[in-house]
Length: 355
Image 1: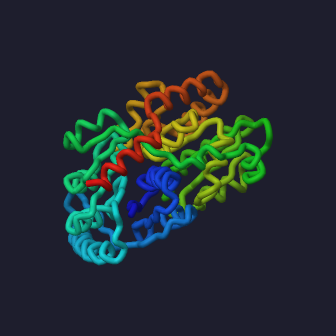
Image 2: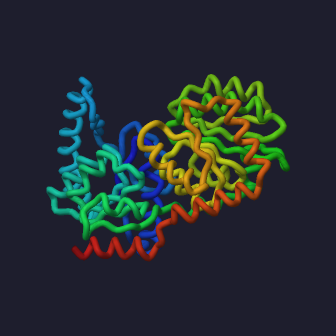
Image 3: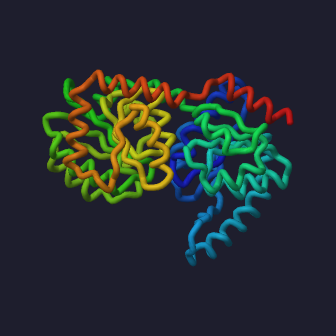
């Protein structure tokens, strides 16, 4: 049983894990537990994984009257999870975070079902802090994070990635997105739910990039498309999409530069492909995620408070004009953020099952 959602951050690495496990043992059955309204349902069903939604409540670390309502939701979710685990009888639970996973992993402890918690971000989130004591094994994407969890049950794994990310085709992308040959491509994404700030910057930056680049813009399904539609009608080098599944690999394949937030799932995919990137992190944990990448010359990091559309367009243009710099950034990213290998994943799973 795999869990996570609300955003696609906890989703993409777990699909990579599931793929490795299924390749080793084709009889393995997976079921995904996620939120009722998040983007993960459509995404995981593309991989033919059965999806079960449960009630989800957000755990805020600040005062809000919504905490009262969400605490009721969390208690309801715990009850749901107790019955769900009795029905499904999973051998192991795996998560990479997300509030929806907390009541599930607490219920698993109640039923003595072993759990595996994977930590992606530099900063440990509240959900993983709460689940860590229940976990049989904790893995981390970054070596430095091993020391943040209990010694003896924490392992540095790297971050898993879906194999189909490597199967993107430039030719397919040119046809799919109706691109002009010979003109560089910028792929901009704010994640599965989208980022208003990224969307605004990209739409406005597109006017400065006419003749320099064509832009594929993944706006996110929950964001207003008024600006995007306006830009599409004005700028011939720009096109917007609300949601990608299989199209994602082709967008990556054809892109010369990727503009994104600082989510670890996306950063991992960029590392796997050795892509040059401009990251504009959300204030908070994403700033921690990208700081070490900037220090290592693995990405260009921009502060959203200090960045305007002209500055972003200028930075994109400078990267497009410097192929050596783009290649160097891609190599540095692969070096500082290695991808989890199959042998390590299977060894950890075997260890959990034997407990």
